[in-house]
Image (cartoon, rainbow, N blue to C red):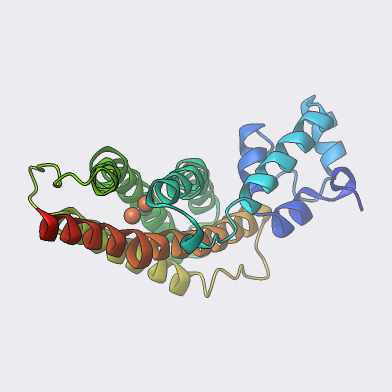
Length: 243
Ligand SMILES: [Fe+2]
Ligand SMILES: [Fe+2]
């Protein structure tokens, strides 16, 4: 069946990234849930082809986040991959998920009290992760790239105001732990991101989006904690031994 004849509810339950696109086009997930994409677009005077194109782009981008073999990447390429795939995901997905959580809490918060907590936790995750990735991109990752350059050039490590690279790494790992706790609490409150039987399409889209984001965050944190950070610590130690 083509996506254009599927209902809005069916599309968001099989493709979590679709919810963000519908939000962007102002296709309300609750009032249009049982309409086909063609019907919803006709009602809102939107081009079906344009919406389909954006849906396909979003899906392609989500698939691009498939796990990579980190051993095949240089430190610089690994940083590029983390920023392009995983940080991009934080910036693209979390604002939409926060908006869905807000709509859902306003509409169904009286029926399911946990939705208010879900809303607060998604907002917290959004604010914390935005500030976290900014610190990585502005401070830690440039410093690690410089360590890599120094290693190649056989020069001593650059001076950093924070002393050793281990210090910002430890701070970032604490923040990963805190984001992990927030996700665990969301998983608990939503019974493993499983919407109840009475769920509307907004509910289905939010839980599907959170489930996909949870998997992406797990891969993101694994690449930093278990691959990039140990590499940086080892590079710095080797430079200090040489110097
Ligand atoms: Fe990161
Ligand atoms: Fe991180």
